[in-house]
Amino acid sequence: MCGIAGFRTLDKGKPSLSKTELKNLFLSLESRGKDSAGVYFSGMSHDFIYKQPGPAKSLIIPWDKVLASNICFLHARHATQGNPKDNSNNHPLVSGDLVLTHNGVIYNSDDFVSRNLCDSWSILEAYQDKGNMVEALKELRGSMTFAFHDRKKDTVILCKIKNPLWLTRRENTLIWGSTKEIISSVKSDYIWTIPENTLLVIQGDKITQCEVETKTEIITYTYLGKEVTHETNFDWLSDIA
Image 1 (cartoon, rainbow, N blue to C red):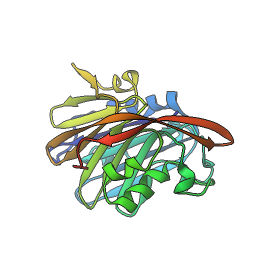
Image 2: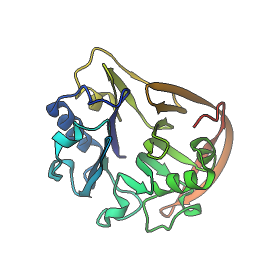
Image 3: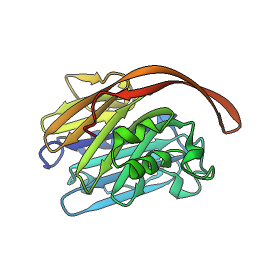
């Protein structure tokens, strides 16, 4: 179990959030994991990542710079695969122009990465191999609720498969968090969750929802020495991502 949160402005302006709200959003993620914490933020002329082993409250973040950005990913990790003392296993994960924060478990991660690495790297490996997220997710088995940024395409993707994700919007800013309690750190008149097996693709001020159909497929994997049965596969109804 991990916690994710973040924001994306839809006009590339500054977010409609206060520093206190953003800090509270980050600190609330500790309820989902204390093995490591990290922040990624991106603006017109800067991209920064701060992460380290330990709880969110121990990480020093330049919040004024975050609030000058138009994209921010927040993460708190409860480690399963990949030692959090190795900071490359901690989120946000970065590979070239790709950035990821993930809550879940990839059961077939052995197909993509070494067992010494965080299984979340499998999502980036699959995306780099297939060239788009729809095709990448067809190769993965597990629970995959995540925020993903392709900096080259300037696209943010939010994915909900088998783990919670809640959202709210304030003026120009779309905000998300793993649970209803986490997203409630931000004052809002309305919060919502997206359907199971859904992608939200955010490009500029456009948000496109991509849903999936499921079909039964029972496969057993050995994950961290235990047998895990995965019971669904996905037929994507759209290839926009």
